[in-house]
Image (cartoon, rainbow, N blue to C red; front, side):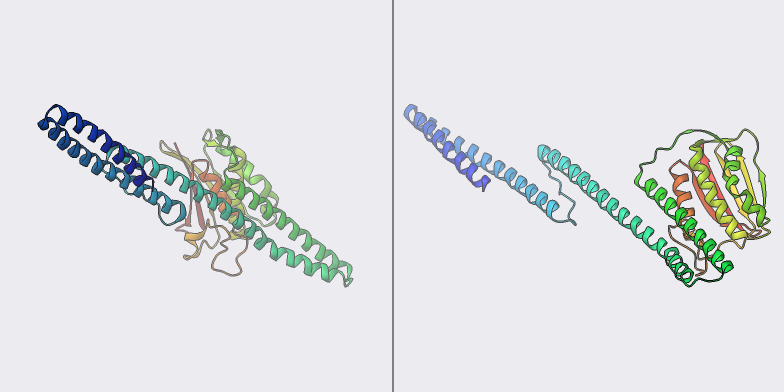
Length: 329
């Protein structure tokens, strides 16, 4: 509509100016009047064609912008051969893509929040159901020894739920990017000793031997508290895998390219079908009786990656699982 109205206005003014020019030209000399008329017609035709083409290009851009705004599958605005319109289309395309990226990020955040809530609800359902069953049994006034055993089992369930909720909240905070890691030199030997400390009593009770080979003076840049949390989750997994009378070996290697920490256990290792999913959230292995919740290793990987490191897991050629953490220099 705006194109036709503006072209009509231009035609009216051009006709008036042409008539006046031709009138003056014919009054002075007929040849001058004819020349003025021909020139005006040529200029008017060329200007009309050029202006009409530009308006069509602008109208096409307008239609494409409308498609982008109202059609989630349409994200491309075709390019124009003209200089100014080409620049305009390029900037509009950049702006459109940026808006689309922001919308996608908002959708991912909503999906992440929904997934986190679903994870918490799913993982809490089992221990809560068990606690309710135990409370039902306690109502029947069992014997003192049985009652004490049920109370100890309930206490263990609440400890598990506390660990689970804490781990899920940490993982959610890491995914949301609201945690700021400290970047400072962390002594590897002190880091490993700090990670081992909470498990020393349990290792002694289950006769699990720990062998460490960590040269003095090796350090990595990162947040010592969070790195200790990551190593603790690896050690917890190794303890569950190796069982009683097992062995865990921790070693460190430092070279010009990276600092590497390896943790190996004497357990059965990973099933072949489980290896690609070791660090997946809520993955508990192909074995239906697998222990754990599938949270610890996912949290461990998230911590290490966000501090510039890498972590891999595989089966050691001589048996057991082998975790490898690397911090590039």
